Length: 566
Image (tube, one colour):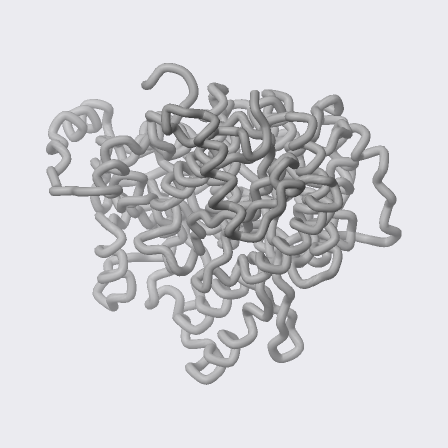
């Protein structure tokens, strides 16, 4: 295969002319023949004024380019879609597959011998891993890193678990407009990703666990010099990959690497969103995500990392405690130590190089965990025939086994319109139900699963209730929230038949979520469901609606999966 500028020539019917024309045009940028004869490293630029999580990307690009050139290759920066969680309508998840498609096609279309993929905010790293898993180009990942923390009245603050906590206090009338405004100014004190174990931190750490980036690149702060040095080292590694031709992401993400990721996910207090993203990545590889294995590991691997929302601290403390390598050392007995990495060492060799941080308490041991249960549990029952997930490590112990009356919201709009009404018929022991908020129903499976406590209950001091939906929730959120019910209501799932006043039983230890009605009545309601309403669609909206799969399949597009189309 041709390399460098000779790779993937534009089709003109004359390969010699194609190269001649390519060199003529690129020389307008001031490149010499010496530069153009070297291996090429593509660097995906995901900087955007709409994306503060990626605010340090220009600095990281410059450091990565320096590393590429020190390694003897030619860096070529190219732009891709950039998605920020708070700025994408209707939801960032709606655009994840579009970013994955665009990134894959840009890697495929342009001449590069390896690629550096810089991502941070929730859906960017998953989209990039999906893209690279479908590509034959060696890829190395560079997370942007977590933001710094702020302070308010002597308390350390960080986005975004504290965002939700203070907003809940404001809704309950505990703090006023002036104070919530002051908090708003201090929650996000620098560029970088959320500084708790939300989706961004979870996916960055899993990128490291699964061997796709350099050690400690999953947790180094966005604002510190170490992040820039890691960028330079990533550039040097990418130059080596360009010269040697591998390995690819597809070669690295073996079943053993995926299993290592699931072990770490349970131990770190990771986001429920990671389950959807890992399912999509596995689909690109032709390896179904083993939900039974995920649940089994959740019973065996306890929570070790003391970070919000399952614990108390922030990513800066996790990094100073040793980050991912230190966590891997504690769960060594559950890992495949022979799993390879993009930088050449095995996971076992990464662990062997760990230098213990004396006195740290952020990363606990298996013998003395933060909590005796793993992060996530997988539920099944007549309400979730293909499964649902709960972040049990961030749930209320008193609600882990609960039966209550359903209070149903038919859509995100219905929820917004009625949740704060004083006329809402709701009590603290009820079960809040949100439906038509899944991949097709919303569309885009928004992070609406963290239903707010109804205002009249919040003012009475209610802090948590059982909440169930076919939506997602932010990895920064907390509470007894059951998510990703599959199949969703808009696809004819049983959530569509729940009526106000029905009893719903949750049994997390028993892994059960059931609608307590007679089987005959259950079947009658299912048969009576009307067909989905037809809606005129165009463009990406039409593509999305016709091809998006369910949450347990990763909410990817069916035509992007490995192997035969479903």
